Image (cartoon, rainbow, N blue to C red):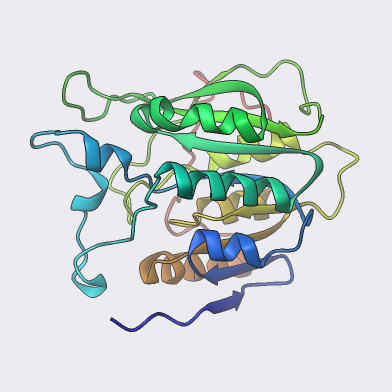
Length: 263
């Protein structure tokens, strides 16, 4: 199979996306050039190690236009994950933050490696409000490791470590995350003194992190290897930039009665 050529798409003066492998993308960035990393890697661990019966898993999502798969998983063996973490550390500026999303299995197998590279400060629980699928226990949560390079405070001291933000039902992209989830990450990290703030996501997916960055008035750079991801993110971001409309998440995922909005 022929190797895909690297593609760079400038969405606006504030947003640029790359079609590139996550590790190659990170290696292409300048040292200490990024203010914040927010990302949801397409982990392969659960698919490779768990027998989930008839449960839906990432590799089962099909799209005939993309060789039967929506996207390639990130093969999260220890060697790859160590490279990923060290590259994230290198590109982040001094005294900065990183938010990395985990499912329950990847949290168990990989979270200890984050502590070898970053100063881990907390584990945030994303309460999806509505119960999902599962084999032994049905899933209603995922996890986010919050860590620092150097020292940097959060923007406020009244933020909880449980975020009640509804999952996206009938999403146009598998594992699509709510924009508000990434907004919460950005708003809790960005200080009033931070200007020309650059957010990076090496696993772009549906582009929710890009929309969140634009909503929060930040610059954005991201990457994904998938044709589907790049196509959807380009369409989604351009519509948002031109008309202020999010075509893939038209409604808020936050129930104000259940979650105090801190951004």
